[in-house]
Image (cartoon, rainbow, N blue to C red; front, top):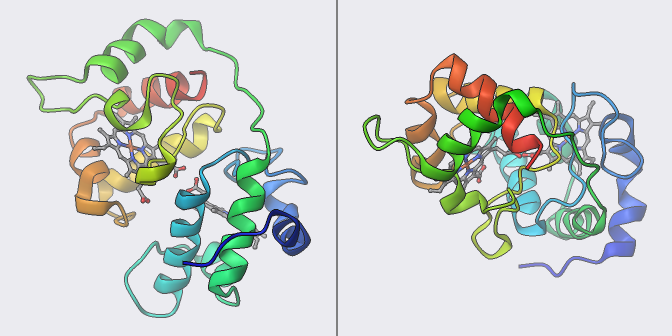
Length: 186
Ligand code: HEM
Ligand code: HEM
């Protein structure tokens, strides 16, 4: 495992700025924010974009596959270390989804077999570096929605043991609409 260097990562981030913004807070919701995300999770995603782009199993994405292709393990570690030190800009709490959102996020749904998101993503949507559980708070709701839909369809299948796919297949469109707003504002 390569040790990431923040300054080296900053120097290597010039090509990322066009989409992810000058500090990892992408100005439009066409692209995810990557500021403040756990380094372990960022590194895993970069390695998996590259793996899928080079014919292996990973996370298939045309744009990010091309971006990750030339990166070495050291580059990935440096970029991850750099973005992890940036602060994510908050998303305002959407009051109208708090009641339903918190019920599902905090409590899951035993009847439908939905595990509570809080178990892995934490009380504040902060995730867990040591387990590579991503933080969610502050992320663009549109991106969260797209990822939940992709886990549900199986288009995104790089989650260990299918933990996100299992949950996502039990979520309705309405659940996804509520949760994506709710977790962004956590
Ligand atoms: C997703 C890093 C350049 C467009 C991501 C993710 C990471 C990342 C870590 C996953 C985020 C997550 O799972 O929360 C980087 C780095 C770059 C770079 C380090 C520079 C080396 C770019 C550029 C573009 C771009 C230049 C646009 C042309 C996207 C898109 C996604 C994404 C569209 C979402 C993919 C999806 O929906 O699955 N990027 N990125 N990235 N990035 Fe980049
Ligand atoms: C990834 C939401 C429950 C483990 C994600 C992502 C979202 C999300 C939006 C993608 C983040 C990104 O691309 O930046 C949710 C919601 C949940 C939930 C709304 C409840 C309905 C859980 C639970 C676990 C879990 C219970 C653990 C058992 C993970 C892991 C990833 C992930 C490991 C990263 C997968 C990878 O390595 O690419 N989750 N999650 N999640 N979630 Fe969840």
